[in-house]
Amino acid sequence: MKIKFKKTFSKHFEKLERKIQIKIDEKISIFQKNPFENILNNHALSWEYSWFRSINITGDYQAIFREYPDGTYEFV
Image (cartoon, rainbow, N blue to C red; front, side, top):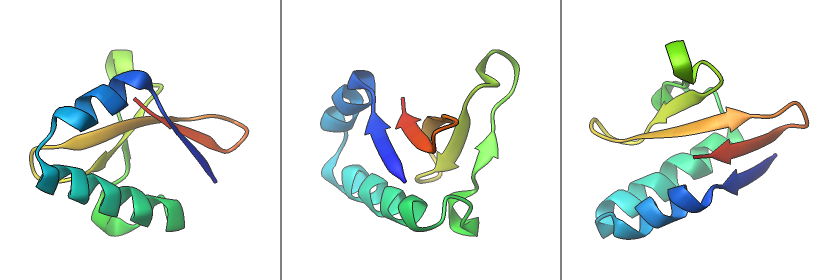
């Protein structure tokens, strides 16, 4: 599995509190092992974002990503 991060994801990540950054790292680590682990609540988005999916980081934060046919995931 290959995971890439858009520049905007990295910019927003750097501005977050350290404890949220740690949670993101934990959830992405779980995602790498099993993208559909129940704790992640991996789900498709709708309407204009129908090309994207989302995983839960905390109650207030989600990570939005896109899956490509070659098995690459890009977090936006």
